[in-house]
Length: 286
Image (cartoon, rainbow, N blue to C red; front, side, top):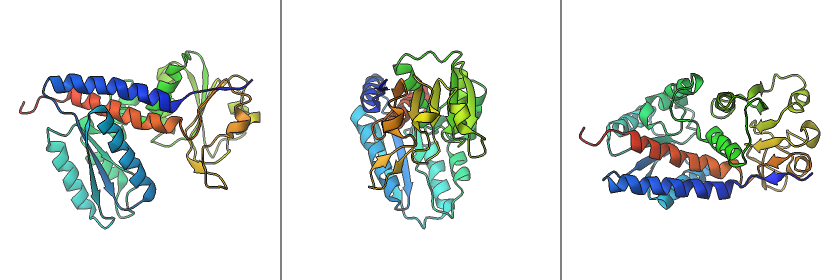
């Protein structure tokens, strides 16, 4: 068996086209959807990510602004700027690129963003809404993973899903979304005993720990769906995920590649959250 690929690039193009239609519908009502992205410091990866997010937005007709600040920016100044954006009815989404410089408290920064503009889905209010099954912004990476599962027609009801990783950004919300789709969910992490015994039971495996080749072919049930969230580099400096792709591909039924899998979908779902924020925003002057 050779697994079928879940093409994140193709699916992201479809999502962007859907967002573009929603943008045009809003503009016809006189609403200009707008996203503000804030980058503090000169982290090379963050610079690439923020440029891509702005470019994706512009492709759909969303207005996106990238605000860049030096790493030495006082936290109080950043918080003040976020509050200004919270009060600006013309801004519908606010994203602060992580990681932040060490002198800044990322939790405090995220919590300063108004929940109605938290298009990254990291605010405690967003996390709480997900936990209790209420509407709210979903973190973009697990949201994208769910859209990928939907795209291949997998019925998660009654399926056993194993999530490897327990971060607030991917692992925990991923588990909650799978649970919301009626999957039976196991969360594994660095303290899990016999990870292989868990993954061999899984109909769906989501690998999200940031460790190269962590999931190998002997750990995967034949025909399982494997979603690789990892972003690592191999010995040659080539981008790779958490999954031993060549090996696992010969066992799994479906698999996401790295690059070209979850990454494009993460950015696409940011656009979905942003257009949703704009659609829900009260009219200017209201």
